Amino acid sequence: MPFTPGAAPSAGNRLSGAAAGHVVLPSLGLGEVAPSSAAAAASPTRTWSLSGRAFVEGPLSRGASTPHPPAAARPARVSAEQLEAAVSQAYDTRAKTLGTGSAKAPSLVTPEDGNVVARAYHLAVLGQQQFPAEFPLAMAAVGQREGFDVVVRVDSKRADALRTLAAEQGLTNVKLVEVEVPEGDRGMDAWSEDHGELHLDGTISVPRSLSKHDGVGTLDATIALFRDRMARAYPGVPFTAKTDEDLTALRRQYPEIDYLDLGVVSRNDAQRAVASLVADQPAKLRVANTYLEGGNTLVGRRAGGRGYALVGADSLGVSRAALEKDLGRKVSDAELKTLVAQDCGIAPADLVVVEQPKDFHLDMHMMLLPDGKVVLNDPLESVKLQKTWLAEDLARSKPTAPGPSATEAERADFATALESWQQTATDRQERLARVEERARNQAPRMDAIAKTMAESGLEVHRMAGVFEDTGDDRPMNFLNGEAALNPQRQKFYIALGGDPRAEAYAVQQLGSRLPSGFERIHFLDRELTTSTLRDFGGLSCRSKLEGTLP
Image (cartoon, rainbow, N blue to C red; front, top):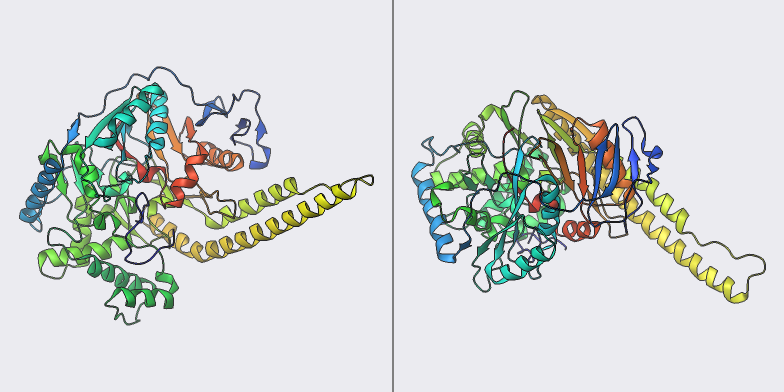
């Protein structure tokens, strides 16, 4: 949907054909990916499993759920009053402790680097105009293979329908938390990653509201965000914006600040969605010092086990404004970083602040691997691959001229088909040219992010992981997925599905070239990909990992 500054997102919006199997050997290039007779029939979720030195594609094996430790106990049903009381208590606690040093998170945010034993993934079916059960059920199918539960927070009015769907598919690892959602409340949504953090000790933290509980206010927070962007992108240029109209004009004048902003979680009061997991244990709920949307914060561990956090620079601009309103004074850079680090459960020295990708949250452009390794999207490499694939597609779809004995009707049909093909080719090539222009504009940002991470001691790897729509309404993102260990300590990765050629490339990169250690890579039904990316979010945006360190 077109983005309008200050506009409320639509419900469900994060802002408001299977191919034959393949074998990928670690030493082979993309052009040497070959068909495999071992591949089974098409399946909504396709799994590439390591067999010897090769990754072999086949359907997701379905059967009895793999034995595994159960997810932590959650309330069976949460009333609106119970949830409101738990959130209010957490705000009262924050007000008493903020600025005293005792607001530090009690433990590390659950790392997202694939080196956590998964007990459960938390997803939500909340605040939607439709009934988006596909993602929880698809994750549960993978969970039966890998050994984890899927805990779904669902509007209590829809719980029976979801329970029936899970039973029909034999998904015994689906656990429901029924949340009472008042009529007309469209705030709580499916973007679980953004709403808060699950910590290793079982506590949950949520970002401080910008508007409620005497917050700084949405407009003032947004102005602070763009003031900070201007200072980073156009140092020395005066900033005088005071209204939404001023910000709109500023974005038109200065393109380096014109990309999606933060604040939707607060505008929707969506923190309640994840807070519902501990509504019956309010002492386990903590309102953070700062405003960190989960998708703009990635937590991992370095070699040796020390935690670190990557945080997008926009989060600090908004958080500073919120904190200065709460504390009634200016907040220094050092104090701001200390409070952000406390929210992540890390030392201030392990906070790595990086520039925004000139798009949206960090998690749409990078993923973490164990021991301080990061995979960062290479937008120019993505376009290079898309050019190759588009040329292949156009060559394959070009109409064949009729032979000399063709009838006039056949010749006329060919002429019509050729004209249509030529128009499609022109449209797709023009669309790809615009995608390439955006990639060239974004590339310096991505290089700067890579440089910052490397200077902090992280090991940065690049790959083509994000593919914009080039006119076929088929965008792809292979970095916004979920990585973890199963109970047998085997590493797996769950990703959005895509073009078979792109999936093969992703398997070769993530499974062979890069130091991931993945033994299985699961691609969900590609039909889910377009719908979620159209709403500015991926699989990881919808999921929250609960687990333990190995």
